Amino acid sequence: MNLGIDDIRAARQRIRGRIRQTPMLRDEMLSAGLGTPVLLKCEHLQDTGSFKLRGATNALLSLPPEALARGVVTASTGNHGRALAHAAHALGVPATVCLSRLVPANKVAAVRQLGAEVRIIGESQDEAMAEVARLVRDKGMTQIPPFDDPAIVAGQGTLGIEIVEQVADLDAVLVPLSGGGLAAGIALAVRALAPQARIVGLSMEGGAVMAASIAAGHPVELAETASLADSLGGGIGLGNRVTFALCRDLLDEVILVPEDRIADGLRHLGRLGHVVEGAAAVGIAALLSGAFRPSGPTVALLSGANIDPGLHARIMAGANRVEPA
Ligand SMILES: *Cc1c(COP(=O)(O)O)cnc(C)c1O
Image 1: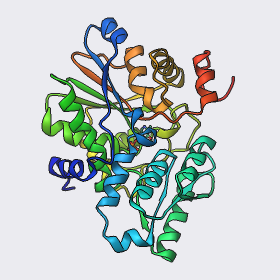
Image 2 (image 1 turned 120 degrees about the vertical axis):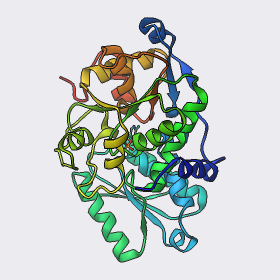
Image 3 (image 1 turned 45 degrees about the horizontal axis):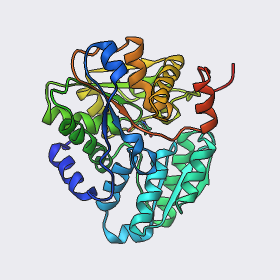
């Protein structure tokens, strides 16, 4: 895979002015408790509520005009679809988003509001992806995948450049991990610009497909289970072309976080005034529980904000999982 820091720098130029540079805030409570700076990269404040706008915007701006005119399509657990709808709308490109029935209602509504056509298909990411393949074949649309694509990885990697610019003596970056576009892009950038820093991927305990794939030495499939970190669900594709090898080669460690620890992370961040989704709380969860012990300035990437408000309220009131016990 010939993807490197130059591609990420080019992506940064391409998407400049179309995405927001998000703030880096020091978590005073955790920094004091752990004796080393803990910094929150507030990407939940990105337009559309997640970092996925970076990759989607870079992917669209990398396509020829004929392809854009026929329209773009994706299957997504929500945030990528939302980002693609927003990016396509901003560029005047027709977008179709295929979602499985597992995707929360607030995410579906948000995609529709952004002007994309939404198709609800099947019970899994795989079934939604089959519908994407049909639209590509029959209508000549271009698929914009959520992670396994060089332009997506390069777009997400722009976060790595920002992190290195915002934090002196960077020692570790805690990155939520699902399909691995985010972790691969950040790892590529940080390896090139701050080679001393450790890159740690974090997933929920149930259905952590990238972690299982790295352990097996090849992409595997796992059953999807309900998690507070719903944006970390879904497979990596048995035919994964880009992100599996990058995550296998570039991540120093992968940590799996139990549901009740994710809830702790959400409550900690909520008390600081950061309403984030479960996927965004895994790094803080690992710091709070001691599963990751920092030894220098550590960045926890808050990757998204799109949590159902009722669920967030139940977690703040003490619930520890998606379903009431
Ligand atoms: C998509 C997503 C992730 C995981 O990104 P991958 O590139 O699939 O690993 C993490 N957090 C949020 C909020 C997301 O939307």
